[in-house]
Image (cartoon, rainbow over all chains, first blue to last red; front, side, top):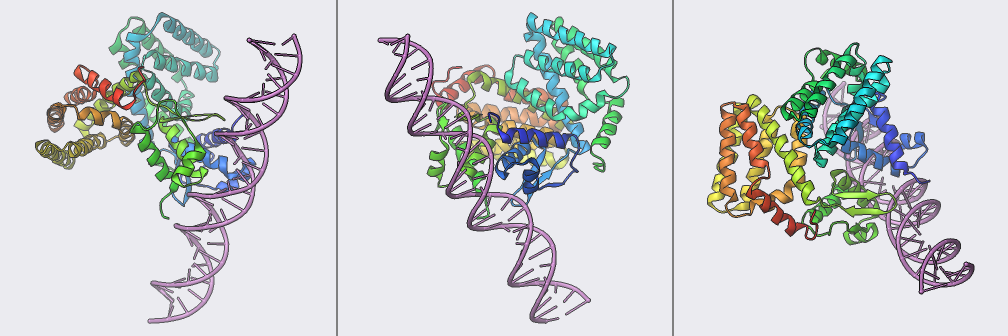
Length: 222
Length: 222
DNA sequence: GTTCTTCTTCTTGTATACAAGACATTTGAC
DNA sequence: GTCAAATGTCTTGTATACAAGAAGAAGAAC
C-alpha cells in the first residue's frame, strides 16, 4: 500500500462535502464513517483535521466534527477576495509573463474555444482552470500563486455550477480574450481590471450564484 | 484536563520554530519529541499536521516531518501579498468603518504613542497588532479579515524583529496616523495606498528585513 | 576495488485499547 | 409537577501495539 489512507479518505469526504451530500451543521460520526470506509479512526481523524484546516469542517473540542457550508454572504465575500487576488496576479503577470507562458496561455484559450464549439462544458471547465492557474504562475510570486490556487480550489463547486448557466461560456471566453490581450501588451492595469471583472460577482452573476447556491446548500438562506 | 494536548503541543512547536530553534530542513523526530514533551505520538502527529497546514512544516510520506523556513525570496513575496491584502482591507474599511470602530482604532493609536514615549517596544507591538486587526474587521468582509489575520500571524516573527530597528517605531506611528486620517474621511484610495506603503518591503526596510532574516534563519541565503 | 543485492534497523502509517468529558435520562427532593 | 442532581451511555482525546516501507550497512559477485 503505497498511498496514504488518510489522504484518500480526506479526498472522499471532501468530495462528499462539496457535492452537498451533507447538510450544513451536520455532525460527522467518526466511528460510523470509519466503518463505512473500512478504515480505523486514526486516518479518519487526520482527514478531519485537514478538512478543518481548509475550512470545510468545524472541529469543536470534545463535541465532534461539524459540516460547515459557507453561507451565501460568506460565499460572496470569498468571491470578492478571489477577484482581488486574481487582479493582483494579473497585474504582476502582465510584467513578468514570459513568451513561453504567453504561448501556453494561448493554447488553453484555443482549447477553450474548441470546447465551446463542441458544447463540451466539462472540457471548457478544465481548460478554464488551466488558464487561471497559468496566470497565477505567471505572476512571478510563488506564494501568491499558491494562495490563489488554494482559494480557487475552495470556490470550485460554486464556480462550476455558475458556468452551466446558459450563455455564460461565450461571455467568459470573451473576457479571457480581453485578459490575454492585456497580458500580451504588458498592460498591468488592464489585466488587473479585466480579471477583477471576470471573477467578481455582480449584475446577473449575482442571481446565478444565488441559484446554484440554493441548489447545493438548500435551506441555508444566510 | 480541559485543554487538548495536541493544541498545546502545536503551540509549543510553533514557538520553537518561529524562534529559530530548528534549522531549515531539519527533520523532527516524532518519538524523540513525544518523549521530550511527555506525550504520546498521537497528539504530536496531530500537531504536525496542523503545522504542515500552516506551511511551517513539510510532511513527506513515510519520510518524516521537515522544518520549512521560508527563504528570503518567499518572505518578500509574502510581505508583498500582505501589503496588497492590507490595502484591500483599508480600501473597504474606509467605506464600512463605524464610528465605534473609529473610536476603538483611535484608542489603540493613543496607546501606541504612549508606548513610544515610554520606549516600551513590546507594548507598542501589541497595540500595533490591535490596530491592524481592527482594520481587518472594519473591512466588513469577514472572510477577508480571517485571511488577513492568518497571513499576519504567519509573518509575525519577521515583522517583530523589524520593529526593533532603531527609528522604525516613530516612522511606523506616523504611517498609522496617515492611515487613520484616511479612514476618518472615508478616503478609500488614500487608506489603501497608505496601508500598502506601510506594509510593503521597500527602501531601507528591505535591508532591515534581510538582517532580521539572517539572524533568525542563518545560512539560508535564498 | 567497486557495485549490486540483501538484510537489518529505524521510522512512519494504521489499528485498537483505554480514559475522560459531554449529553441525556432518570430519580429524588421540594 | 417541576427542577436539580447524579448516574449511565456515548463520543472524542490519548496511549500503545503492530505492520509496512525506506534508508543504511554489510556481504558477495564481478
